[in-house]
Image (cartoon, rainbow, N blue to C red; front, side, top):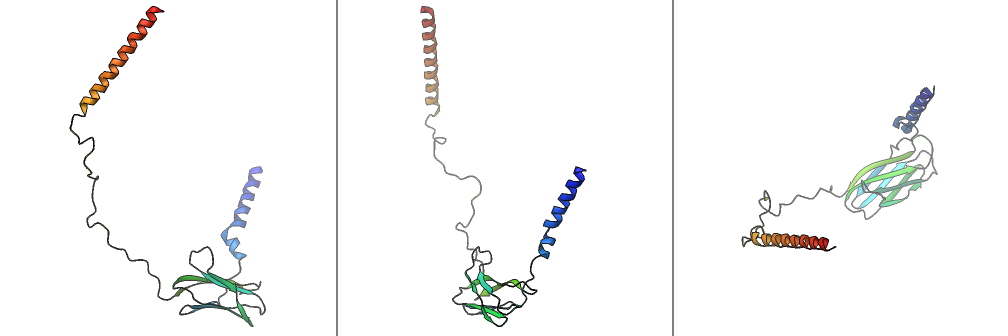
Length: 178
């Protein structure tokens, strides 16, 4: 019985938290929103259902975290508009929201471009005409030095052997005395 209740609870949770259920509660997008661009002047306009309600609008970079320009839209009956001057050339996203609860209210988002579309930078020629292949050929160093690299190694090994033998003799004499 507990398993059945747990399964029913999980199924109800999935149903309530699904995107379809969540989107049913959202307000529809305002279809009247327009963005007009004239040089570096951008005007966002829309119609809200109820006269006298507050509407806000602004613009931002497409994946920006903060709006570049944002403010309360001027009202003229049900029409709302806001104008931004000195907008730099580039691609932007305009958004607005009517603060009312009826159908046709809500927010809207539109993409727009100021000036000519901004193209990605042109890929320049590489710094090197032919790309090197394989390991770097640096040369030099102790591996290339053929001035008898084995002799110091043999001398060091011999010195180590003598030191070890001397230590062993000293320990035997000490043990014989004590």
